[in-house]
Image 1 (tube, rainbow, N blue to C red):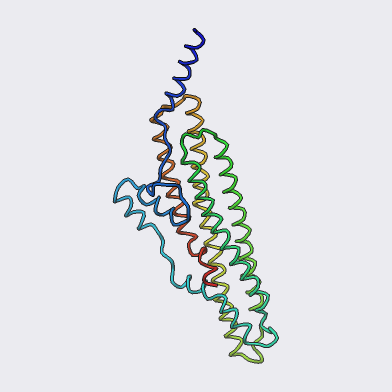
Image 2 (image 1 turned 90 degrees about the horizontal axis):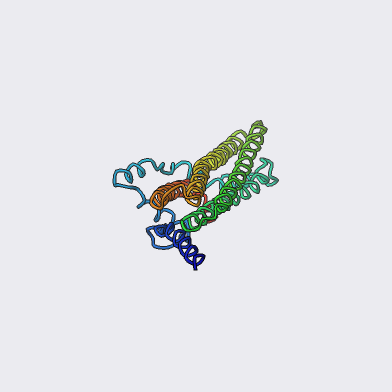
Length: 265
């Protein structure tokens, strides 16, 4: 009888300690499904209208010239190829490399956003105290960063290769045509370097997300070890969750053009 009562008391204490813990429910009322849900879930997390306005002011809009060059870079290279019958201006191999680059950029953008959705859906379950999920998510983000670095290097190498080809062209035979080719090369090189810069910018919110995973893991560990209260646990986890949504929204803004590249091509 004494053992039964003790077990009941222990069970009650354990259950009672979790009585105030509930999962985070995004404002959309469900788990996130597609990248557009990130923005829908993130914007209402700002505590007041002024914060929301500050966020809106800090969003860097697309530069029209960059979008135009990225969109039409394929056609600039097509022009170079079309200006000779034997690819004497060297555009054909660069054209193939450009399509590969843009396909890689398109894929990494979608992988990053889908990974963010998965991350948000998993860590929003505050009553799941398995800390290994934070390590798994951090590992997946680090893998994305490595892939981004690799694609960025490919973009830089492509820009260098095109610049080398451009500088090797001789204008002795047809000065006007060569100048047109060089101008087209300059536009493609500019767009590829712009892609490289954008890839680098994508890494900033990914780094912030890794930091949040570390903080959440620490908070769960404290709670499981009875080093924090229900209300403190919920308060801190809610704060981390809101920041995670904001970082994910920044990632969405910085990679949106990449997710449209396949449509543009």
